[in-house]
Length: 451
Image (cartoon, rainbow, N blue to C red; front, side, top):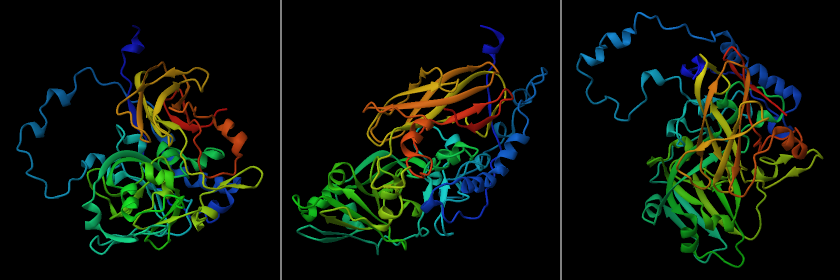
């Protein structure tokens, strides 16, 4: 083994910056044209400047010895603190930089906000509740559960209104699923502009959800099995969020959920009740859920007719494109980070598919010229994140890191140019293209697109 293989690689995260910019008013209706992409790029310059200003490599440790080993630290010689004064535990003060960060655009009013999960700093597949990404259409509410009511009506024999106590007495299930906003990776349709994986893919999270299967409630109300073809889910926030779900899907794995990661939902995640629609874009996971209506046709609500639709190259729109297709991303090393030395690195990331399980992930370090199979970690669950790892020794040369996922249907995650051939460049939603991270000889990583 040569000297470089004996070295241990290290990763340094570049400083994160709070990005403050005006909201991009027309993005959701007219797509991300060059002017809007330029606007977004300028919004992220602060983060990129912070990355470029840092030193690429750390100095060698002095041979005199490490004082952190030679001298006993204070915590080894003194009495520790008692039970924390904060009844609800919080992270270490040394981890305060790992935060959800707001979007500098993509929304219309201040109450309609987006925050991104810090994928680069997460482990395993479960997103801590406090770091779960947020998307609000009219701001979030903290609703009194004793006053919240949930109704099922429409093509049912026995329309009913449930209290939270009623729902929580019914048979419940707990399942782990990913949730991804349909606009995740939206900026990558054009020239890549955002500097870290938190912004390219951070509208993605994965949690354990607990609630009652919607099928149980539909049976309880006696839904019309002949005429009932769709259900309408309605939220109780000011935006009047409503979404259509096919009845077959509603009867399969949809959950009316009140808990996430072992505790009640957080207010920003829909407390006290939300819909969980596995594999489908997050907008259909209606928060602050108050009503399900059974109908015989799609409802074409405002958020299905003029929002969350895909603008095609011929000027037409795709509607009801809800499934989140097979996708993956390397979370570390990734753009915004710096490799401090040559040597061994664990390339790690996440893969997911709205159509079932992930069966394989390949990794390339030369921009897709050669691929090698990554190691998939457990658990292996449908419509859930899957962690992958890949052993790699960096020799100090420039590289381009990529991952490519394949799901159980045989679908292979496409390159960005392959996706553009079908979808054009004016889309916002459902970008599941391969993501590339460019590694410079200095150790700095940046966002780049390869074809």
